[in-house]
Length: 315
Image (cartoon, rainbow, N blue to C red; front, top):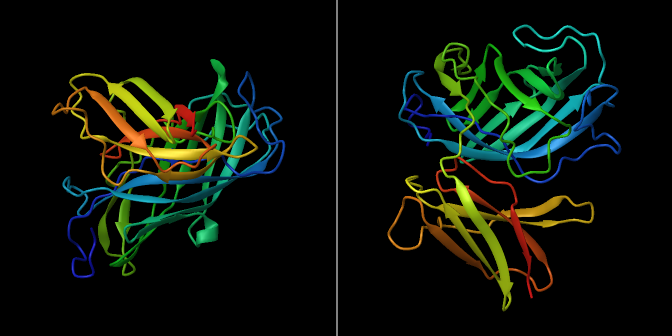
């Protein structure tokens, strides 16, 4: 954790985007999935709440600092899908079937840290492109060049060079899922990701990388009885998880996830003494009679978050 008395002490930051709920946008702007879904896709503004894990290294070769979790919205303006635009440098794909987009706002905060991007946040604009794969017309490769600033207890840190982030998509806007797992963020080069203070002194590096799940989920269920919902799940053996947190949501009339909350203050540990592939149980007694609740689980280390996989109605 940063303090005002530790301007250059070891800090660390790595980012994994996890989507909560459904994006907000204008009507009739959903495109895909399907072949050539980019073609004739109308432009729109997508607003998606995100949860991110950040690592900053000070200095850049320090490997010891702990992550910080931040949350907030990202707003993206995407243009109409059009053919015939050359692919961005370094991106393999078809030169047709393209959507250009700009990150208008990127703001996520937590634990005294705020990550900012986009011109609405006073940051150098960040632009990206989706390009249909030549050999797989249902999928588009994404590439975007980001500029970030970080508000911290020691002041604002900024980047001088872009951070290129890559991923793929089979539809827009992103799915109404609690995790956008298909994004990968190879923005971990310690030269390209350097951070500077207001005096233009190098402070450290911003590191980004999507975590892979360390647990294979074999079973997950939700069962309502006597005004409460019992959750049970099982994981692959020989994993070594330190436990899980529970996330809960409702759905609105449009089928979007709303009122998303983490319901556990402490991780749910495996039953018995085993920490390596086990059965887990959690009883949620905070629901309201008649409501249907949807549940996701997250590793205690914050490295992986499932979609809302199960649901039950309180009775």
